[in-house]
Image (cartoon, rainbow, N blue to C red; front, side, top):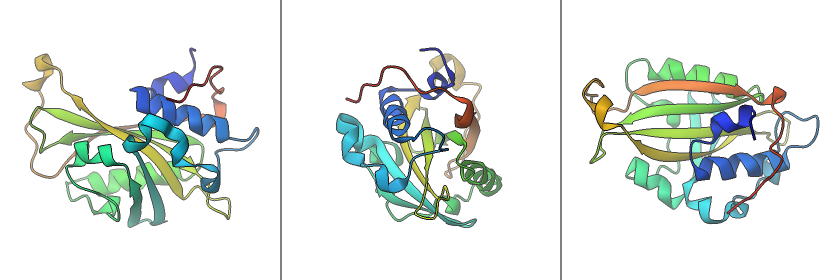
Length: 186
């Protein structure tokens, strides 16, 4: 496959989530409905999955967090408000991130420096929009994984304070992407 979906497949969990999301997306629709997404279909990748709900611009609540998400966060984040991130600049970045995601047209990838990792690492998360019963993209399903920083770049990456700083966010326009031809869920 060589299409925009490939940009989102940073690991097997992200690929499996993207494939499941694409299967559920009805022709001509922006994104699948939350009610159609059954996390159990993620198979061996289920522990990497989390789901969040946009409540308002100050509250994006993690509703479910898989057991392996704690490998990245070091604690269960279920019930946490993503918008409570206190690092300078993060709140505005997150507001923009979720505003764009709520259009239902974009997949989002965020990358944060992990401040509590034993080895210098970044947390990379893919999030995909899901529609609420009123047809608004107010839910997001995602996966998060810790990605070690390459040894040759560790020295040029500044030491971060205890609050995780968002390094980058990126978006892929899903409304112009073609679905993958071959879909395999583990």
